[in-house]
Amino acid sequence: MKKWTLTATASLLAAALLLSQTPQSSQPFLEKPYLQLGDAPKLSSSESMVLMWHTENTPAEWKVELRTSKDSTWRTAGQPLSLVVSAPAGEPAVAGKDGAKKDAPASPAIDPHLVYRARLTGLVPGEEFRYRGLKAGKQVFEATGRTRKSAGQPFRFALFGDCGQGTTAENAIAYQAHLAKPDFIFIPGDIVYSSGRISEYREKFYPSYNADEPTASIGAPLLRSVPFIAAPGNHDTALNNFRRFPDALAYFFYWDQPLNGPAVPAGTAKAAHVMTGSEAAQPIFLKAAGERYPRMANFSFDYGNSHWTVLDANTYMDWSNPLLREWLTKDLAAAQSATWRFVAFHQPGFNSSKEHFAEQYMRLLSPVFEANHVDIVFAGHVHNYQRSFPMTFVPGPQSDGAAIGPRGEVAGEWKLDKTFRDGASAKPKGVIYIVSGAGGAGLYNPEQQPDPASWQGFTDKFISQVHSLSVVDVQGKTFRLKQVSDTGEVVDSFQIAK
Ligand SMILES: [Fe+2]
Image (cartoon, rainbow, N blue to C red; front, side, top):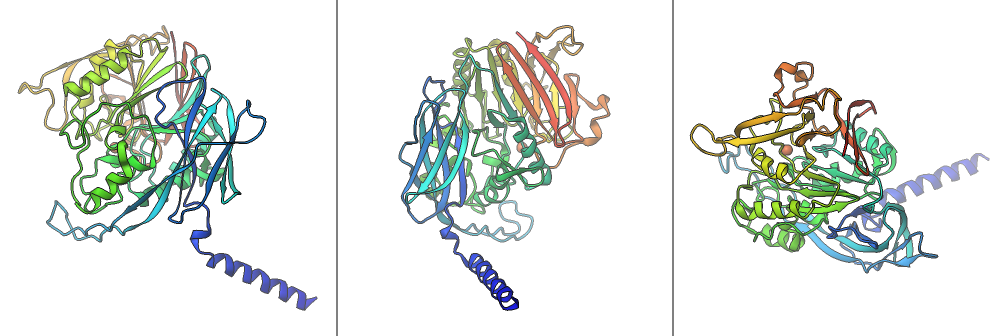
């Protein structure tokens, strides 16, 4: 008996040792499958999505199969296409050079790895479907996905920004998003901190949102089941030191979103992202990003009876540029038949926080939003939750005649609809501006929550003492937003009826 126990223990130890020595390349995934909207801005009676996953750089025979309510058996999805992604080592920071305050080590090289994309087609709007991944004929993954809703179907989305910082709050918000059972998740920028790098996605994004089991401490299996859609924030694409971090700008090769934004040639000043630094790393990045760079920074899409316009609000952009304004105006004008029009970008035009207070330049687009009947503008950047009164805004010049002050200030006059707050009407007069940037990164200005005197006149609600996410239900002509804390408490709610 004793001998058997010893033998069994020895076997277990040997097995444990074997497991710990198993080379990583035998694992099927570096990152498990995740759903993306893909370049599919419009609704279709036969919906599609893109399934992505990452593996080591060892080519293998991959196949994806799916099954909808219309399929009597598994059928094969589009042939997965792989892309080799890598990044050279960065150059160390040298004190006094490029504004560096002290010497700092370079970012290590990122080994070549494969990023797969498979197109899932023939999906039934509004329905769930099953899919499975097979490597060399052997099933290695299976999950349920949620297809985009058609114009006649109600839908729910969760929205939070400023999230991937590896915090316990990030995981708690991911868990709350999972409990809400959304059809999709929208991130209004600052997806991962602090520089949108491959290494940061691996440490602070995929583990939280593609965890195998839902728990408040670790995260939830969201990415595999619902598409995440995102606007780029400053921490995603505004890095100005590509030389130190050549694995940055991962937004352009780890995401797959519509490519219907303004056609601005890369490098066009103030109308698109402009790459700086690291001549060696640039061609490697450009090959991985392909046509997504820089075009995928702005786009629009339809979901149910709503139209979404997603903008790059980073400071390298100038939204007074006629080329950009023309695209925005045309996009919104073409969406007048949608019941709801939502605009989303990272840096808010209307913000009461002392943090980022002067960065008001996106206010200049308010007249365009108003003229085209935009209902809600969602932003992040400021790490708390703020809701404005329904409002209109007429921009005015700075004292020196400039449209924008040196730190981003915009002068002008706003008109507020305070009857909406009093519950006298569910029909707002003007646009409601939401800041929902409390998705995981450290909170800003908690001291302002109980101090309405510190808020700007346009602010109706200001919640800065808890992390939170927006959970929105759209059903026909009714819009309901609940702001939910990281422990599930509803900290704000409002409703619009058309
Ligand atoms: Fe930000």
